[in-house]
Amino acid sequence: MKAQIRTIGAAVLAAALLAGGLCLAVHAQSLLNESGQATLADAYGTATGPEALTVNWSVVENGSDIYTYSYTIQNPPGDVLLGSGGSPTLSPEIVDAFSVGFDTTAAGAYVAGSQAGGTSDQNNGVNGLFWYFAAVNPGSSSPALTFESYLAPGLGNANAQDGNPPSPWASDPNGQQVPVPLTLIVPDSTPTIVLLAAILLAILLFRFAIFKRT
Image (cartoon, rainbow, N blue to C red; front, side, top):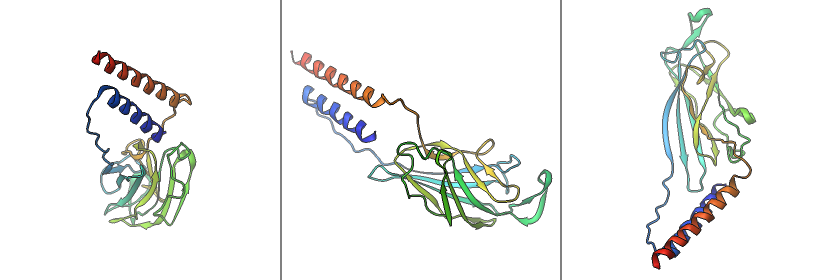
């Protein structure tokens, strides 16, 4: 789809250049390279303090139009197990699993076999991707959990887990979302509509150029 749209765009631009005698400087599209941090709220709805986890994320695009998504989970110092009602115990809390929610079956959403970084992982289809990794103690971070996609980022929910409260930690409802591939449901006729619109635009540009000459 991306290649088709770019081909159509190039055809329209070529028509405009040939018909109107325009002289334009075409600049290469800059590649995406973004990073940031999101906070996941604990099971009791708290999104601040030593019980909340943070996720350092990045999305980097390469020259082949592939986006690499990366997440590193930080377990802050002071994170402890919580009992009934959220009362702390003396035991430190670990985190050992992470998932992001998006439809991996959508066209271009997930590059097969690209998921990496954990001790084991799983593609859950319409529910996203899951990683399991060695236990991360308070004051430590997980390895970078990565995958590749042909789609640019939007925002989606993330979830981190262990077997004890304050697990799970989540984007929804009190935490922050993380970048995931932006998947859209589009009608099957969309490529045809785009093509017809591009052809019409090329014709209009051509007629405008001829009119100017006369």
